[in-house]
Image (cartoon, rainbow, N blue to C red):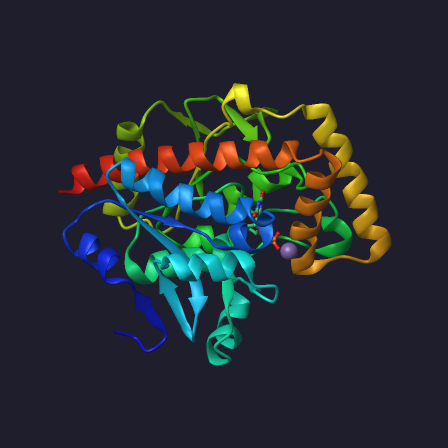
Length: 305
Ligand code: PSU
Ligand code: MN
């Protein structure tokens, strides 16, 4: 085993036996939600994976290792400590060498998936092309990582803190296969509709697993983005969210917030502005994504058995 990688025994055993494993990210815990909802959500997501017949593997940087699978106390530390690093590919070397506690973004988590051989990863939203890209060049490291990782990532689309049409274009250029799960539309995170068409559609986990087998059996490296709309009953008021995002963007601009701090800043701002409504929607959509990811992981494991 590599000195800088630790795969928990339960996860390694499941992988060795060809059983379904679902990876989960830790940035959503450390920087995407406030305490205590972050810890409750992290624990709930692991239970959803288990109830669906798979093994959860939350990825994080702990004690000088990229860790695939987190203990209950690791999750608590990620949820409560104040100086947790946000770790994407570029941050990983220093986080490891300094033995920092680090929360992996979608890109950092994908690295753990690739090294361990996990094929399915469920989260809330991915990073993408920011609206200010013409001035800032801010394009999330999630996109190039999705391009090279043979992993299917379930998300509720992307937030409109991003430029969604440009994000879809960047995903196409990167060769990421984007599919609407039971929908023709690319969902907009807090709301099921963005007005943009998803490039492809699958109707269930079995169809999804068949596409995964086809891509990777042919040796086409790279990922899928499974765009799973928030359930309508949990959907937030699009106008209220939109207004909060606009205000958050202008506040970020006037306070000079940029780079890796921008996404957490906006998430916090929108949550405060909507009196917790966005947080409620966020929790509901992540739980739904994890349930779909679990079904896909189980179907894929069965197909490959
Ligand atoms: N979008 C969300 N919630 C999140 C994130 C994105 O709706 O928690 C997190 C994910 O970890 C994602 C990261 O990988 O933010 C992207 O950050 P950046 O925009 O700095 O690349
Ligand atoms: Mn960025």
